[in-house]
Image 1 (tube, rainbow, N blue to C red):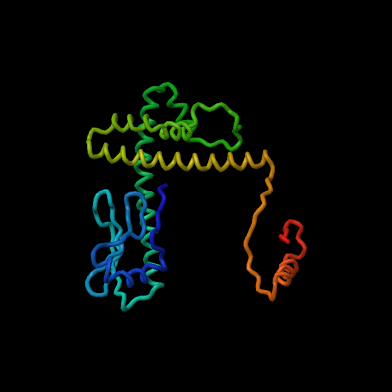
Image 2 (spheres, rainbow, N blue to C red):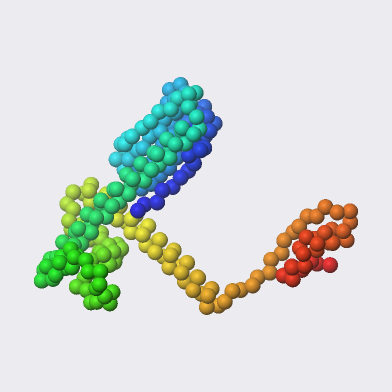
Length: 245
């Protein structure tokens, strides 16, 4: 799934429009959110009308639009409309990602079938049945999910597959661009998760490290001694805290 980037939050859209309608929005539209090839755009229309548009940036086409008269609406209504538009943005982007990803996976399955024709029947029988009692350690003919996931993340293999199965140059370029962005996003998440796990493991092995922190504190008092006494009373004798004399 592609990640959504939010530049203006739901509750701030109407206020932002009112602040910018006679300056920036008089010159150009502003992007509220972005996900994949889709953007949610805020624009100034005629008079006091504010427009929200979902645009397919790749094809430069308007998917849907909505207009608000800012003199007859509220922040709550606009915020709800923006929230629904962002949900639609997410659905459209995820649908496209899933559709293109699945198409590439189908090509991988076709490739596997061509090179493993003798195992196709056993593979499909396995995938079409479910045995709750089967052992997790049972030797499998093929873990299709692991096979596809591993091969798909090999960018060189995936780009070669796209070149093999697509002849239309426009479609080929779109699939190549999609595969590069999708695989880079998926592998960056894997790397981040692995880094977090390794850091946590290292912390457990090394034990908890104690650090010393120093803060500057302001105290209102009649003199320095009263200030020190006030601090000591407030800190209640915690042995971890030392007050410089």
